[in-house]
Image (cartoon, rainbow, N blue to C red; front, top):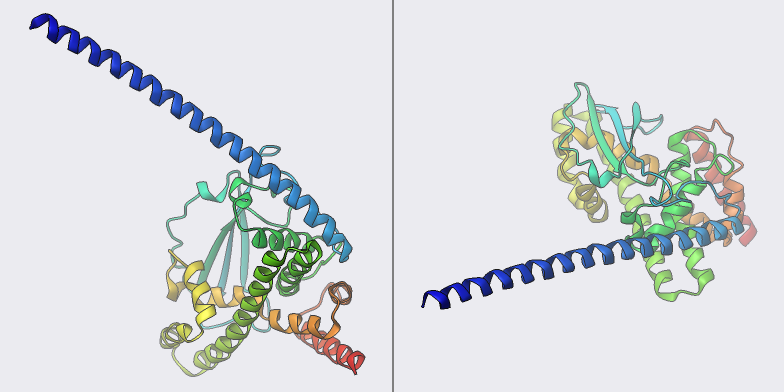
Length: 327
């Protein structure tokens, strides 16, 4: 019995060693496959970026170094953007009050912010990102894993920011670059003959146009409330209004997750105005002129020091000119 017990114990130890060795082999194989998959994703994404940048040139969009390299070629750099707006105000006729960016030598996924504390007298909104208009912005594994429609939009968006394309005050440039990037993505999939991705890109533009319309309508109501109500009461009523604008509400909730809505409100609305105030209007201009290259060339004629009122007047002039050409 004793010998039998010893044999069983010896077998158990041998089995345990074999199992441990098998698990180690699986772990090593898993890591190897993961590295191969990561490399393949980055390589595929690099080819896409090269293709999109070449396509952008056909529309008059000069390519930049942004996203032209991967994390295998250059260390990643991420950004933390912070926008601050005086409480009870919105950046309707001037730039947002305070805007800053902080760079980190790491991808945003490694930098989880717990919270931004209240700053007396200011509303605060922040956002993190790995993609931005700078030669130090490299394509990460996370970016390579995102949907192709978003990737194409981002690549074109960041290239449009290049000084050879647009060199305007921040809020003016974002107002132009954001819709043009999305509209150019539609043209990219048209040129490729990719019907499925084209439909997705078109649906994305329609959603962004609705977002723009809802944002502008919400801002009108917010301005009235800030002018007629005590600030805290106005903020409470504006936050209660937001669900009435479903497309905007969905994005607001997603983009402010982890942030305090009453603290973020004025800065978030002001930030969104910079990106989407004219989205629907510029998309409507493309419908009239029918040629994105022409629209981009015309928008490039804006003076480098243009302000909000000048941009609005210029868009109205383009609308009148394009309408006449149709007639």
